[in-house]
View 1: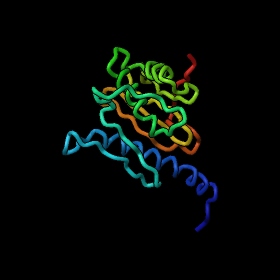
View 2 (view 1 turned 180 degrees about the vertical axis):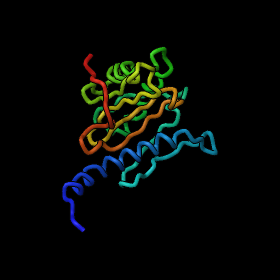
View 3 (view 1 turned 120 degrees about the horizontal axis):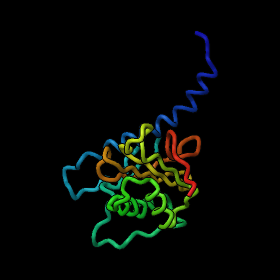
View 4 (view 1 turned 45 degrees about the vertical axis):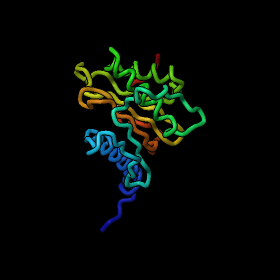
Length: 177
């Protein structure tokens, strides 16, 4: 059997991306399930590559909880509560379907706008997007949010940075405002 070094190299580059994509897809799919105890909060979920994904169900802060504050020298997990709170606040507003609203609100909360990515608000034929994803790279991890009619309630997670250094897969829109 002949060896194909080019194909092997492509596979080695693709495999980590595929694993990260599968982890995010699994996490986003799993967040639609309801635990047996409605008060239960799922803990971190291990992925096949040894990392963990930490979900925030419903992405809504408790009514009596003080507003979350950005922890500039903290980890992505330390900042997930503020990311989730900002996401929930925008989702509850009239701008819930505008990716720019999430970017602007996250920047106003102290997240670095140059470390963000956001997908398009509309499909290639001009229809509203079924879901919008947005992210903030935080060191070697990503805070990722997903909202939209296909998502239901907002979903926020922490995942590892993709091999190429970004947080979202596929085409994103320029953040040039």
